[in-house]
Length: 203
Picture 1 (cartoon, helix red, strand yellow):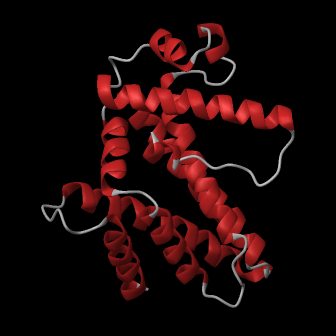
Picture 2 (tube, rainbow, N blue to C red):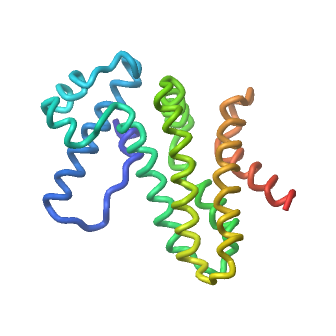
């Protein structure tokens, strides 16, 4: 359970009501992920998730619309954490280096087993795969917005937009290369570094 819990982000400060809602949502997601990993994605029903989480089926829909939303909740929370760190970056650092280093640190927070488990869940559902593609577009836009907050010169925006696109592309290629790799000792973060090195070489 502790490994799954690391996928979620806790705000530094919040009201009691917000904290209780966040904790309930996290509990539902943690229970669901555990069931997905043990019973399979398709084999886990919403009724079982609600029962294991100690809530009603109706209450479940107050937090998530579907099983897909549970998986994407963890991915989006993890991404939001990375963007929060990006906003703290010094504008004196090259943007491409800042993104690369943050992606590597984000990946290294999770074990290979965690990465494989979530990746397998994403690949197990056609609906998740479809939403994953739209998620990349959303991540690209959020990354661009964060870059513009740190590197504020208006004349840099076109380049920052291209950098956001290339960074998401590099991440996608790195994850695909890791998924298809026959070397069990090569980490996901090393594939991220390789992908960004390729971007630099071709620029």
